[in-house]
Image (cartoon, rainbow over all chains, first blue to last red; front, side, top):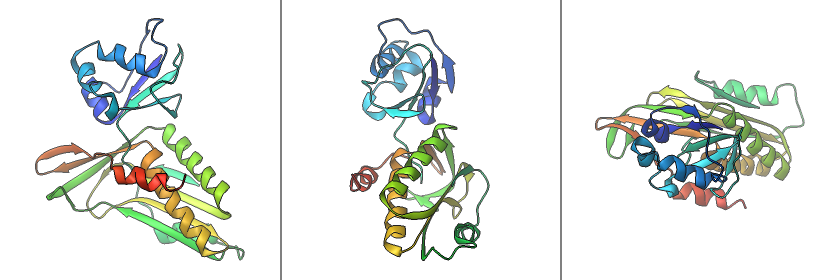
Length: 83
Length: 148
């Protein structure tokens, strides 16, 4: 799975992207966020409050209940502030 | 037409292009968003816009498609800048062309409301007290919810 991070999520995690092999039980965006949070350090800080986090799977906005699978591109970012 | 770029744009030239050589268009409505020089009671040094390359363009295209499905639009242009911008700089242009003004006005407002809540851009401000990510505003969600 390819993970992308933007804005303060990227700053807290300390990188903009990475490839991960998530365990089989990580089947939703929410489970992936929990799994990343458990890595501790910057991840724990970035994923501390899921309410402040948004996600996209394969460049489509999704909720935290959306499924994820190997090969997906999953992005985590704060609520958008363009315009 | 969607464009994401670091360069400035010329609103007059973009609007002229929108209806050049056509006589079926009776109305063009446009919105230009600018960098304000003050934020949270502090002088703003600069604003940096980050985005999600690829998804940004796709999301803007989806927003344009929705506007075209709702209103009889002859053309649409959305230009959004990224990178470091100074106070007074143009950030975004939305312009809509239609036979009559109601569709042009409404669609332009819809496009901006949806852009502000859906398009993956993030603003970071540099002020006297340091760097701050701009927080999303609930009033923007409320504005977008009006169209549902």
